[in-house]
Amino acid sequence: MLKELPAPPTGREGWPWTTECDPSVYVNGTCWPKISIVTPSYNQGAFIEESIRSILLQNYPNLEYIIVDGGSNDQSTEILKKYNAWIHFWVSEEDNGQSHAINKGLKRATGEIFNWINSDDYLTPLSLFEIAKAFTSYPKCRLVVSPINFVTAKGKLIRVNPPTKVNPLIWDTLQAKGLNQPGMFFSLPLLKALSGVNERFHYSMDLDLWKRYLLTFGDSDICRIDHKTVNFRFQDDSKSVGAGWEEHSAFDIENKKAFLGYALELKNDTIYNLLRRELKLPDDPIPMWKQEKPVRYDRLARWMEYISYNLFLQGIRKGKILPILSSARALGPGFFLKKLLNKKYFLVR
Image 1: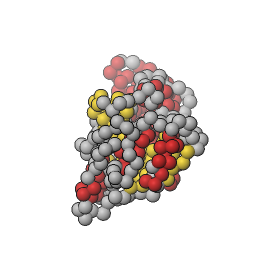
Image 2 (image 1 turned 90 degrees about the horizontal axis):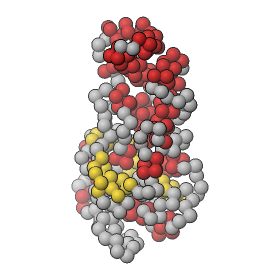
Image 3 (image 1 turned 30 degrees about the vertical axis):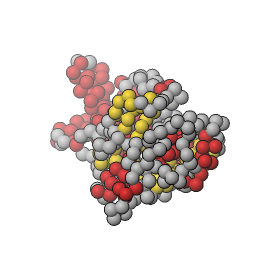
């Protein structure tokens, strides 16, 4: 592929400019699954060529590469035209933001494995090989999680970010705010069953997708690899730098609104009001995204019970009567009877 692609810009050397993955790693009789990669982009002309080359120069033998540009007014379109022969589909037109772009690409994707790679990030060498190897080595695999590199705008390593953590209790995984989306490669049919990302989100679409995945398919058959698959770039125009992740940030506010949306699905006003009040959440839920395969409502109910029960225990530890009474009332006597009879109540997935 390196000899076929356009020459790199002057002064660019190393990966992915003047080196490529050795294609001989794929010559071992394995039937390599089709991997669909979607790159959403808008005015990332300074970085998108590096992203494109890092995907193409994997030399992966069964790749479907789709780029959805939001009508950039920088050099992005010229770069896309430059690599037109090696991109399966690309479009540059006005859209409703990153989430909309991801879903546009997802609808066109036809592979077995899927991830979106933002246009200011880029794959590390042999990432697609390692991802495909994990899926083929474990046929039941639904999702591969991997570490990634945090890098500066110029590609200098900041630190390694570990894979998305899957806790012993699914309810704790649902509670976690941390996520390593670039290092998560999903079974494409499952993401299509989830109808993609919720387009109401501009910051937390990946975390919402992960929670809906867990509520729908559970946390089994998730494979972890040690290969660092993506270089995630921190640069001035990235949302991660601009919005931050701290409390009251755009990410935090969307997460809270999403959580209220999940609680609203139960149609249990007592638990809803308890969680909104005790967790100090804004009364502005974002409705759950309509999916081809609905979430498991028994799983959703148990998650909300788990949070409410922990609020009950927290009230006991702190000796605060009102939280104890409020959470006990929301849970109801039936819950405490079930919990008493089944000590492993929350171990059920």
